[in-house]
Length: 105
Image (cartoon, rainbow, N blue to C red):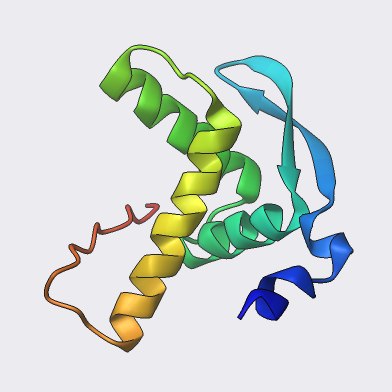
């Protein structure tokens, strides 16, 4: 089983840094390329650009929690939630709640 994890292409977990504008300020986010790919997929599923998705997530966390702590980790967890939702749609499990994604519009 460990070979599934150990034999990954190193490019998929290499860091990539991107500049984004959040709450009117420019900042850099450093995530593994695999997470950038998943975030791009989430953005496309929501019919929005990646920068807009990141901005909306940031704004929603700010509104809900009053601050945004460790945004990069939050984004990684958002990717995991998204992948689990995709898996649940393919193989529904009544034990796992599905959180609906907001639609742009």
